[in-house]
Length: 322
Length: 255
Image 1 (spheres, rainbow over the protein chains, first blue to last red):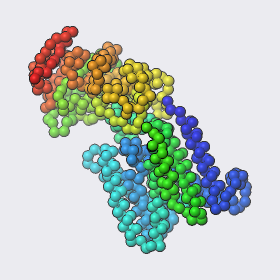
Image 2 (cartoon, rainbow over the protein chains, first blue to last red):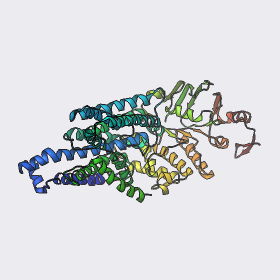
Image 3 (cartoon, rainbow over the protein chains, first blue to last red):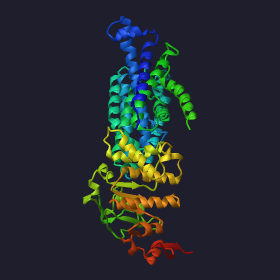
Image 4 (spheres, rainbow over the protein chains, first blue to last red):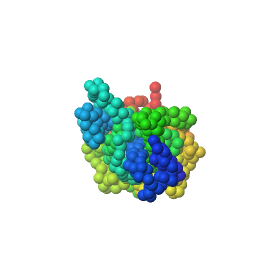
């Protein structure tokens, strides 16, 4: 019924164009010929360092993180059957933020911050998982409420930590909270996870379509609802944890990209999920390119740019739809 | 052909005693009606028979195998359910909605093909909603949505139909059409069980009836034996007058 090739092909081309643009632009603008030469193992040493060690890893990280967030958001929206759901709605980014800020407050940086973020995300996932299970049955409403309350608790801890932090360390923390790709130097783990999850959810797409119509209807049509729901929850949590660990809590991509695509392409998850991976990646890649070139050599937090780009685009699409 | 059997089945309604355990067998070719006042457990019974709820005790068996031991996908190929309430989720067209009836037959990597589309279109045609195929479900009237729910199960083509008030929201003509469709399914060797609020539809179209009382009491059997005015008056707590039209009894509530 759905033709996947055309929309996905178009999005893949857009992603490639964004990738070339992001590698070409910066403090030194590189012509496409130079980029090609470097990719073939030639070119000047400066261009080699610039592309292979600085721009390409960051661009690939941006693409991977955007894709992870958009896919996680789309999965959460199906799981909770709530259009307002995003990857952070169940408190995962709050847990990650507390972990990362605690590392920064202790005065350590780099890998420890990432590790703290990952530990916080994991803790939050397990906490919500355990509490929502409770003694009674499991419902999306209960999971949502548990997640929102846990998120509020993390929020209070974040505010507390910011309040007691010496002023000279505050900017780094604020950048992390808004999302920042400046330290994302290892694109392969998030890219690999994005690819694996896309391959895993593609065959589940039709089951997700059925699940979106309610758990009873899905069970009546042969879906193992409970297993699928926990699978989505854990999968989306893993995606979000990886994204947050790589780049802080970048807002907006996970909420708005799935909705934009639904307005444009319909609601078939078999199309929406891979499209989210491509479009979310492209959006964050473009946003990050803007973030590091707009007021160069200063950089803006990329989360600000995603919101500034995404809000008007989304409102326009919403206004145009029936 | 499939048969569905309830063996010493007690449905689980919180705060209610066990009542009478059900020993009912729905055979190919039969049309069963489930009658009872609000809250008697008709929907719970239907969901329990479909394996969507665990019974308090007893067993549901599909073709002599315990339903609980069969995979959901396998069950969905034999047993279709028309729900009373339905959840919209994300916007979808009428055609897409009918097509999900093919879900249990397709492998994870398979896309719906021409054959699936043909079945869905035929089902929409049969329920007089083919002209709505490209409309969004959210824009349909209550009766059109009801017919779409039935078309979805028709696309699923199960050997057993469990239908929860299939005539809800339907006008008189479409009520008759839907009942004729379900009776026709039974004539082709499938089995049908439906919850009904309309005694007269039950009297007209069902060959077996199951009466569910609020306290969990129940009785069942061939329709002509069950359509005792005194029993029905007790079932609903409502006085009835009986007339005969076309060889079937017609019950009219009295003031």
